[in-house]
Image 1 (cartoon, helix red, strand yellow):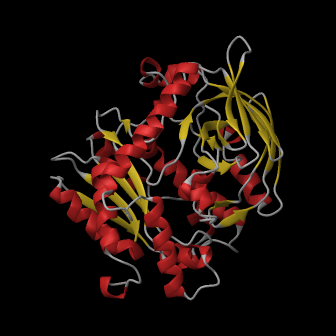
Image 2: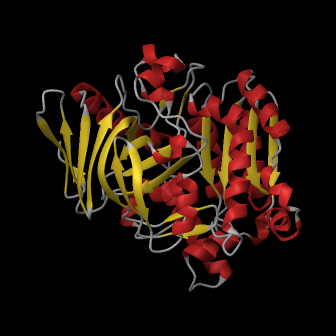
Length: 415
């Protein structure tokens, strides 16, 4: 779409670009920027590039994807193609990050793009891509650089969220929801983000002071004890990357999060919202953990894809993240299912299978990969969040001596 045909106020895109650069990345003068986006998001890509250069960026490099090209592979490629990925591209991105380039991703794609495709090929392509991307992903997962993800209201995505509206109205409705969640519908979004970050920081400081050894989740069919990694640290909102730059990796964000111990998760977790993974809707997930590992897993829809996800590697059946989000979060209160984890995870408490964030450890551990592993940090090719929280969620923090402290009651902070 050209600016003239966009069915929403484009000044909101201008504000989103400024927030992405000044809040999301806090891009520094002379710093390069690597940006990935679908071609449909070009109106935002161009605005972010302009905002980045105004902030003094060195070189802004966009890498564009296209849904039609993605489908062309599934409809026409040889079987061998599903075990290949552009490792040369990801190696180049990793080199850029090693040279302190910032990373920005724009999400806008149809979340159900691969619905109906062969689940085996979807899983193989996803694994090949994850393996190739790992050198670059490690720079992000280890928080070596400042990075950020924002969203653009793609047409197919909009129709998924608002199926009963005509396409133009659906795009306008999704844009309104995205702008509200990203706080760019306010007079001064930068100030709004400063205040929001301060609130999230207060939550992380309280949790870090408590130094819980475990969290016990109950409600909505979940009865799960999540042991926390040794030397874990809670994060939320703006955080300082290892390159010294404070950034907001996710816009929007309502969560505070940390690292579970990969060997110390036990009990049953039931999803409170569907998960969309690689174009498949996975509904009513229910899993049982023993000794940190998923030993039983079911879903009413998309179970085959979910099982393939668990089988990606040894770490895919273990947790790499636990996050706390009150039911009163603006995204939850919107009542929308976005079919996009960036938004849906900020509507409810959630867990993530797979790779941990090494930054969610105390400083003396975070910089040492061996210490992260020794402390219980998980390693995997994947990192997939799904929601377990809701209005019935109670959470107790368990201290090393067994003392219990209320953390959540009926889906809200107890403190």
